Length: 69
Image (cartoon, rainbow, N blue to C red; front, side, top):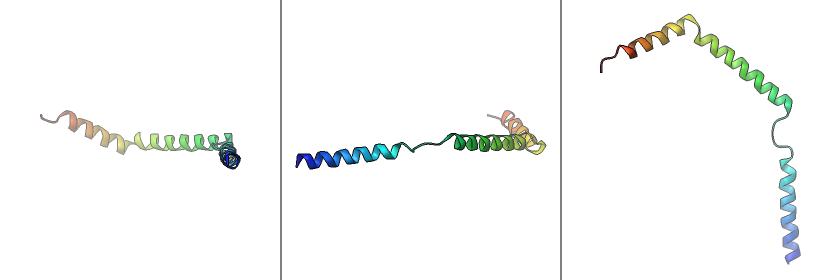
């Protein structure tokens, strides 16, 4: 009985270790993630620095600073 339980536990432990070897991203996936992140950052920067958004943000700040308490 002891040998059967020990063999089963060994099989479970070895099976989970084998499955963990392939976990995580490879270098090409990291590179694609970085390219996508940079692209999104550039897009966000362009939107925030546009004239319309700048005017809206300045108006919000101006109203917040001139609020009566």
